[in-house]
Image 1: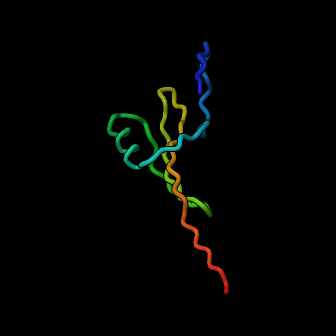
Image 2 (image 1 turned 180 degrees about the vertical axis):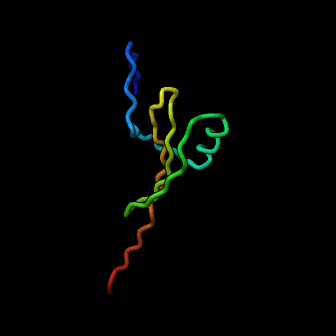
Image 3 (image 1 turned 45 degrees about the vertical axis):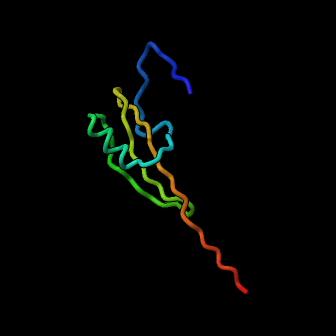
Length: 81
């Protein structure tokens, strides 16, 4: 990943441009908040395959970066005899 410097401001959009996969997102969110960083509340949701825990981190200009922890949901297959 590279960052480009522009002379004009980049407009802030209302959703994250990308996600960063992390571990222990709850602790990370608390740590960043305690250091004075602007963060959103923790969100959780499940898909058919994964449990998701995430929050957004805001840069000084207000751009969002989503930090997400993804844990596979155990799938049990029952074979009929």
